[in-house]
Amino acid sequence: MLHVETRHAIHQDHAKGMDTATLRQHFLTPDMFQQGQIRLVYTHYDRFVMGGAVPDGADLTLDHVDETRTPSFLDRREMGIVNIGATGSVTAAGQTHAMNKGDVLYLGMGSGPVTFGGQGRFYITSAPAHRACPTRLITVEDAVEVNLGATETSNKRIIRQFIHPLVMESCQLVLGYTTLLDGSVWNTMPAHVHDRRMEAYLYFGMTPEARVLHLMGAPTETRHLFIANEQGALSPPWSIHAGAGIGSYTFIWAMAGDNIDYKDMDMLPAEALL
Ligand SMILES: O=C(O)C(=O)C[C@H](O)C(=O)CO
Ligand SMILES: [Zn+2]
Image (cartoon, rainbow, N blue to C red):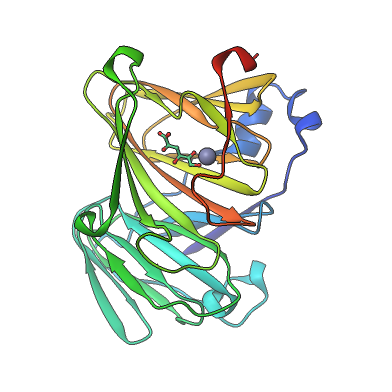
């Protein structure tokens, strides 16, 4: 079963007047992982799509999606898939890729229908593409590791870059995940914005009762979302994206937009945040 929800782009002047429920309605993506379903959120932020596929042993195929008005979803798009569950498989363009927990699969434009199988919990990201880049399975060993932060500032973390120019070619997608070290709670602090690219987060690896206090909003109009395990946050280009966990967590960050330069960030010292 396929379920698709559309999220329109929100202007920062509109966002600052939103109450909690309205903020969550526009920026939280809570229900992406449901057994036996493919659930997508089709956004108007750079036409980025995020979602989940949970085959639970019975194959699920993603092919035509009405929102793109193309015969097959990947006819004019690329896709990045992260398995956050047990071992599963993804089949596309006549090739089956076994995916262990933490593996990332990049599918190039024109890969055709995508079939998810096994016990994987697949996080799906996709952005419009202008050329077909080679499909690639990227394991944790292939990723570039960046160590950031410090214990004294409670933000010691490992950033693993998978769909990234240092690892492989893509059109727009840049994707990886960040793991907090024991005792550290803060991601992406100091915070930043990048008006050239939107970003989406998926928080996972959390206990059911844990929450991440996710910070968003224009730097001088910050707001928050309390986010539970396997829920996502949409970050418009004008918004900061950072969080502190009540409990341990990992999060997948994925971006699309005008460039694929991970370091193209406008950093904000804490005193610039209100
Ligand atoms: O902890 C971090 O810092 C991040 O993971 C930052 C994200 O990767 C990001 O915001 C990239 O633009
Ligand atoms: Zn960012």
